[in-house]
Length: 510
Image (tube, rainbow, N blue to C red; front, side):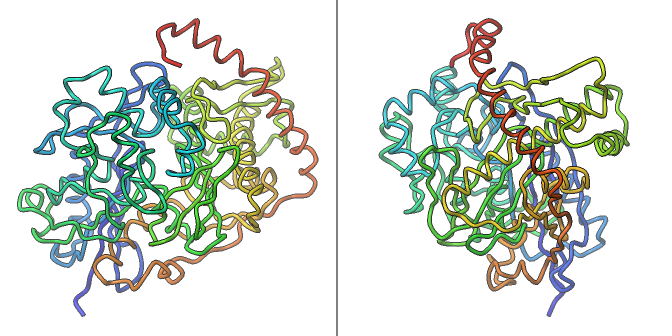
């Protein structure tokens, strides 16, 4: 058999990770990353320039081929992952009409309220698996239609980041079930666009591309893309999936009841199931899995590693390549509870469990005795407390979770892993590829799509997992008390968040 490779691009919030996988050896041969910026031009706004995506996609592809020394013709397929819930409007030629509004953007609160007023929260939740929120694609497109009507009128398709990447390679407009299920416009159980919802909202149904299983070969690398990327024209292009769905596979959550947590810029806890899991309080939501006929239910928070990164920039404004290691060491030197300091990690509003775009971050309990180590530990604990609220929301639905697989950049921190084990009261298990799980999920989708892998269970052969940290019983009582205070602190400050928004942003829709 000819030596074969798979290529995947994972368009994350901070940049693109391109990964080349050696099929014969079952290992990642080369991986590369190239950053791009996010524009936070106004409070609650978050946009990215698709020109940056295109630049780094071509750059990373050429770099992988050069560094690996392989023949481009040995690449059997290229597949994709990307951050979800965005809105990139393009014309008939695929030219972007504006920057992409990304998942973190909260501007469309009035449009989300409008959607709720039409359908009610329960009906839409049962149909789509999602509760109404400005984070989803539907209210973002409505915002563009209302505030930038000329752009809306020119639009031919609405794409997600990985859909745009797939278009750049193939010239085909397409999306997959997982990304479509994060738009608030998708019939989750029947796996098709909810045309009644789209039409009732006054949106053009033709804006939404054909939707396929994640393993679908949607087209082949065009001559133009081959010239830009270094790939061979005709290489199969597999659509792949949204980053949450790809991470689910890459973490090893391919069986019912297997749970994992991801800690990157954002964070979530998810569990795989055969049926959508609907929470009566709508704290969690459900998306389409990469595997046919499977789902994964999860609760997502806005700022996890993003909160720790914010603290790093605050403490080291001139940059320090060892900053995170120093912060981790300092946090480890402080006992559980950060000497009485609580941190609310709501720096970008919040999704699960509160779904409050006006929520804000807070340090509570500061004294003159506190310094950098306490602040560092408080941020790690604050993110962990909110993840515990998400875990509890999933557990109330009779889901038995005995361990937690952990992936993402946060999984590299031993002190954070121990805090998570203690706060969640679960053993933490690490897959071998903690920071490449999302890319691995996309690679497996590509491999299944071109027949290299038989199914998604191949993940068991490709990665090993090990137990990393166990909960320390001595810390349970303290963290239980602090968790109660964490919840109370949010409830007390919640009315103030709304008043702050009125005072500082009087024209903001909410």
